[in-house]
Amino acid sequence: MAQAEENESTQDLEMNLVEGEDVLYDYEKLLQRAWERIPEDVAKATERFQTPKAEVLHEGKTTIIRNFVDIVQRINRMDHMEQFYKFILKELGTAGVIDGRRLILNSLVPEDKINEKIEDYVETYVLCSECGRPDTKLEREGRVLMLVCMACGARRPVKVKKSRTSQEDKSTVKVGDVMEVTIQSVGRQGDGMIRMGKYLMFVPGVGRGTKVKVKIESIKGNIIIARPVE
Ligand SMILES: [Zn+2]
Image 1 (cartoon, rainbow, N blue to C red):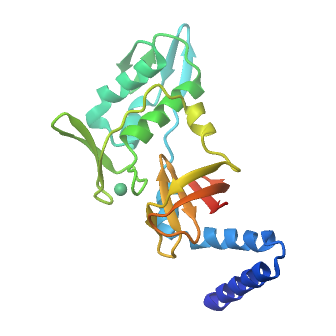
Image 2 (cartoon, rainbow, N blue to C red):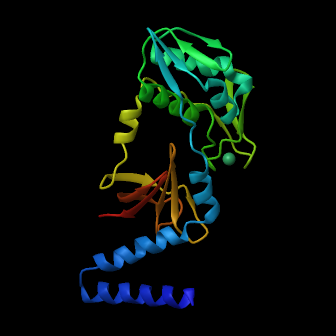
């Protein structure tokens, strides 16, 4: 049944192309199908992990992250707690101390700034760039810090991005953007896939190794659907 529908809509599209009619309507159908065809485990992997949010209190001239140690546990970094909070302090440009399960910052820092930095840390030091899961650990290999995924076995060196802010990161990807990409792998249904930071981009109908100019059609969570443009 599903196979029959797929054949039918492919034929529709071909007919429209032949007749030179507006293919936008069929493109909508293609997009819908692309979403339906994203393998479930990929969709789960990218949806499953939500970076924990800081519970923030401001007291006098200090900022208290009440659930700091809970966050450290959630992101599997109890063995790197010091590295994590030093990263946060440095990024926020403030001093601070661990107090029980809390992190106390010696200045007033807005809650969204703190959450931004936590997300930066998770993206750089926690999430597997292959499967998107947080079940990872940090290992030293000589002078190189490696991120090792316990879910899929992937290993990659930790790449610390220099002086970027989350705003810049977000503004680099939005619907309508046109960019040149190289297809890194192909999904089970034959869709080209590209991992871009925390995003996974699908380009229906384009094979591995192909360099292609694409336009972003939609973004849902960490999943981007793009189509080739000329
Ligand atoms: Zn992985």
